[in-house]
Image 1 (cartoon, rainbow, N blue to C red):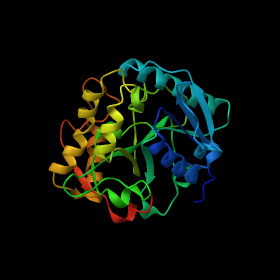
Image 2: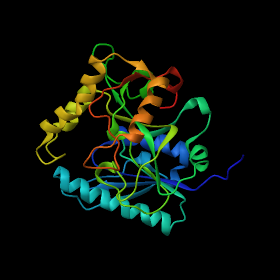
Image 3: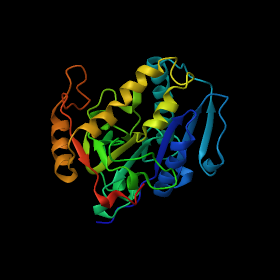
Image 4: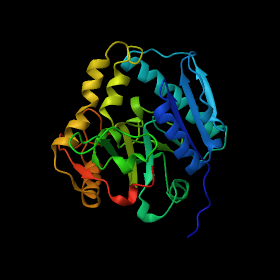
Amino acid sequence: MKYELKKIAAITMVRDDDFFLRKWVDYYGKELGRENLYILFDGEDQKVPDFCDGTHTYIHKRLDNKIVEGERMRLDLLSDKARELLQEKGYDLVIGVDCDEFIIVDPKLNKGLAEFLSEQNIDYSISPLGVDIGQHLEKESEIDSDKNFLEQRRYAYLDTRYTKGSIIAKPVRWGRGFHRVKGHNFHICPDLYLFHFGCIDIKRMRERFMNPDRIGGKSTRHFNKRTKTISIVTNNEARDFDKWTKIAKKLETWLRPFYAWNKPALFGYKIVVEIPVRFQNIL
């Protein structure tokens, strides 16, 4: 059956991160059209890079740089923007992600993101399966920004933090980090993945998180927390991607933490997978 393509927007908010934002604009611009990208810059000291030409950009007053309060304000702002796009700008779907997050259709389907999402029956939201890419310190060297990320990084942790309701069809309120849709369940979509690249290079992470302007002086604690992915992929045996992503999807569909029924859980079970070669040319 042939489906009419839906009108799909992608939104993000960023501060001092041209490295990932450039990749974000290139990827989602190719998949959805640059005219459907909406980028909010956190702080009047921010400048819009030339590579954002053709997108919609907004300079916003600096949000609170304390982690919890700043995240709450950020996601309230992005939820309001998504509501505007759905109700006033005629969009059928809105994708909300950070600039180091990329929603990818399994290449085995030979479908672009817009085509794939246009075929889905979405009530409020759907979730891709979270795939947290980490640098394997014993096998992988520093990242080269001129090459595809997935040519250089082969290992990932199936982290429930990145299985989240990033794709919405109706106005909702996202929780901090897009990690849940408030008041609604989540539905994991087969063959759809959210690749998180924030942990692809320990050197870049150290330089970025040691910036005192980032998160209110708590950079060291946040850096140590984020490097856990690198430790996990380095110290655990990688398993078959196709087999274990199916297992993870089933587990995450049924297991929930007691404090948040609309988030997935694996209760500490660490699944590391090796990314198939078929993904290498995607990003």
